[in-house]
Length: 128
Picture 1: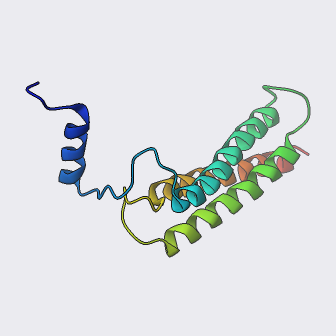
Picture 2 (picture 1 turned 180 degrees about the vertical axis):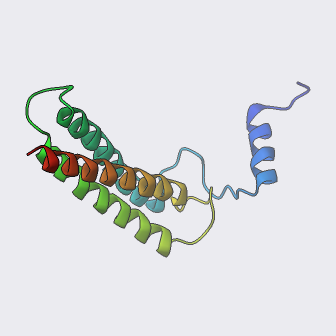
Picture 3 (picture 1 turned 90 degrees about the horizontal axis):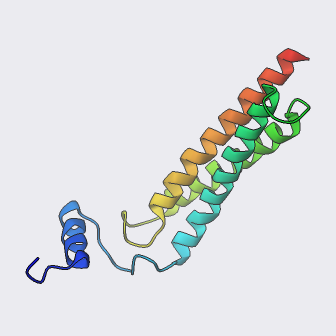
């Protein structure tokens, strides 16, 4: 490819799109670490919500999955709150090391987990 490396191509593409690469791609900054907390809580809430929903439908295990649904709902609200606070207080754009993309992912995952937990709670309430 006449001396054009993959890193050069990605750097040119990022500059074209508008990303500012202030930090290395694999480096964990304090902003990225804070965003990872919200994203991790969101991922946990989605997993718990999916398991609770499957249990309430009778696909896995015994019981109605009510405790897991409550945990998913609480974890989802916490994840969405942490991620929203990070997005509201963060400066800089995507790719600057502030963790904005991770906070966006945490917000979406937290909302999905909260909805799954709430839907499972509504389903178990109707079946009792």
